[in-house]
Image 1: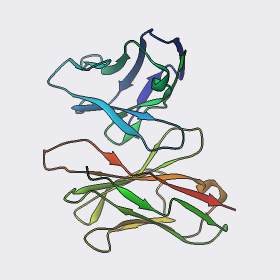
Image 2: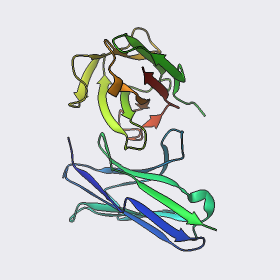
Image 3: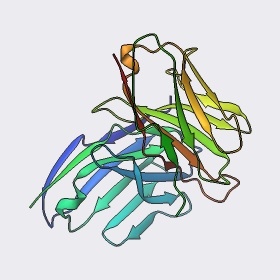
Image 4: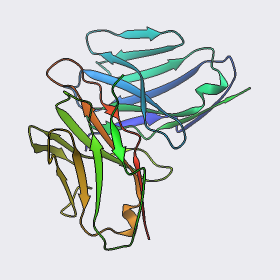
Amino acid sequence: GENVEQHPSTLSVQEGDSAVIKCTYSDSASNYFPWYKQELGKRPQLIIDIRSNVGEKKDQRIAVTLNKTAKHFSLHITETQPEDSAVYFCFNKFYFGSGTKLNVKP
Amino acid sequence: EPEVTQTPSHQVTQMGQEVILRCVPISNHLYFYWYRQILGQKVEFLVSFYNNEISEKSEIFDDQFSVERPDGSNFTLKIRSTKLEDSAMYFCASRAGQGRTDTQYFGPGTRLTVL
């Protein structure tokens, strides 16, 4: 399958700090890059996505950046809150990254 | 807002038995998918389906698996002879396609337990 590598696997931050999660992909033809959030026992939920015609997209405290040359895209969460605690997955074509378990400590 | 639905929410079966997992994609969506997630692991792609045929499948999707769209609303995943290692959460997803959006929307999942 297509290679989607995600780092880190776990991330622990203090409430109010920022969190950054990175993914690299191998399919040069890809033009759509979503991020999903999955809470325990629930379905993956789309939180933000970006298309290859832009380099950055922001939605309140969440942003995604894309570097097509280097074939990587990143999720940025600012002013983290305890309810941001979940597993985050990047996604490319049909393949999910390995997931990042984010723990926001109050 | 329309959602993908799945039934049952939890299925318990004996090893070697056949199971059918059911999904109702979002109306007017054209692309359908099955994924599975073993407890504590990442979501893994199984198969994609478009225009009444499989368009892509992964190595996991072997001859034990099949998919069907028996009518205009349901999309099913059949596992012919379940194995212990088939125990997982199975997610269905659908996508509008036709250039409108690339976003896949996921159902709530069916937890399959094989004893």
